[in-house]
Length: 435
Ligand code: PLZ
Image (cartoon, rainbow, N blue to C red):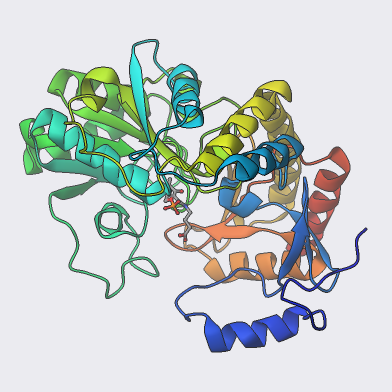
């Protein structure tokens, strides 16, 4: 193990405590952090801070480092690319890797039809552009989103996101023509079937918006920040069918679920749902900032030349990383790895749930799993329990995250290259933290 090193010029090695003080005097308070420690390095399944303390990583930078941190192929590709050129702006002087990433995305995403892609920097930017494309192609204004949805923090995506605190509070006014309808949430909707929940959502749209006014229906196939809510089987296919009949662009936000996380390349693959447009980010580039919209050529190419873009979108270093990350996912079969990790994790979580009445449900798919915590015998959310278990995990060397509209969901997103030993150690800590 390398000795912790200063990441600042010369001088002594700063400790996490010292860095935290400096942060307080330099970094805006509005930007929070889950961990109080400051990272020195991170590998497949662990994060080490500047004081040499180590955490098993069940966060993957919020479902980003699916191929692991500093994955060997990604490091090599990035190194090679920075030495050739760092930026020309694709809109000024284009380069091959941008084209190659688009080719990969067109081939990997659901749907055998002809597709085109455009590259951006962040998930929110991809979502904004998907809405722009859908509006432009249909000539309609409205966007339909769901309860508990999370789509980003920019002005339009705040409007698309459901939860007020911390994302929207006092940041309005928000973009218009956004309509929210009920989600399929099996634990909390009285056990509606997927078809029933879809009918409820569709009737709301038809009564309150009118299908002919709707440009896009935007949905996370498994909700991320909103609580790892897995809709009942049949919900997504029924919405897909309605969208087709109504001429509505079906947009799947696969930003958190994509790139092998759920045990398939994309969560839509599970039920064979084929979106018209997909938004991608996070896992796409092994930790470098890259995002994309991929979809039907007739929608993507409806937009006039120059209508889409941005200075950094599809930056060559990020594209090189993406190509290497995608190659890694193929070569290591990370979709299968996600299923394996998920099976081990789910077994253990179910065993904990059997003895802990605070766990109302173990849910998710592949290596995207969560437990929802309630006051025993009720469905009353218990965010304090989620925070307490999470804090116990952090203190004992396991990095976990919470989520959910009610803040009462503990979620687990290990890198898909985590070793069996690291996974087992993480699960032991988690198990003990519930005690
Ligand atoms: N769509 C489904 O999960 C990002 C947000 C963390 P950006 N989720 C993590 C936070 O608190 O800001 C996300 C997502 C889905 C869109 C986004 C937005 O992606 O890359 O954070 O803009």
